[in-house]
Image (cartoon, rainbow, N blue to C red; front, side, top):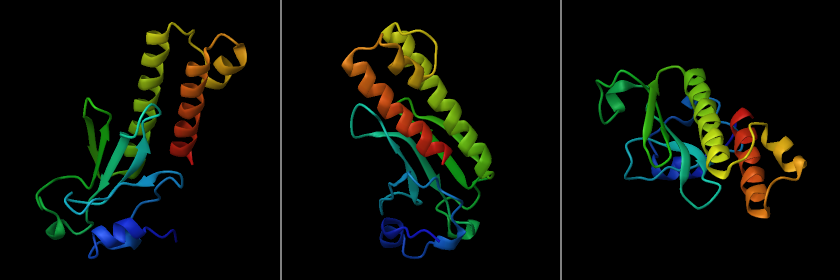
Length: 146
């Protein structure tokens, strides 16, 4: 089982064994002032969360809001789009959908053709800055699939 030292430190009463299979390349983002441990990936342009998933206690009586009907909360970027569920696969699917939307918006904003990030890099149409962003995006996508 993977160790989660930040989660253990910030939430010492959280049952680590109850965590879903967090993608291996996602970072721990837990902070003791939050209501639950969190994990996710950082934005490719700066040091802010792009996707952050809060994983609440499995026992509802341990939660800050015991009547909340869900255990997982996905927050996407600055616009704070939120997906809630008790099903981990639903959260991971929502994370991939969010990444797809972020990628499409970036390509539109940059005037790049609609093709996969690796194909765009190989096509030679990208600036060095775009290539850097696309490479970082590929890493984020793969981190979410893993």
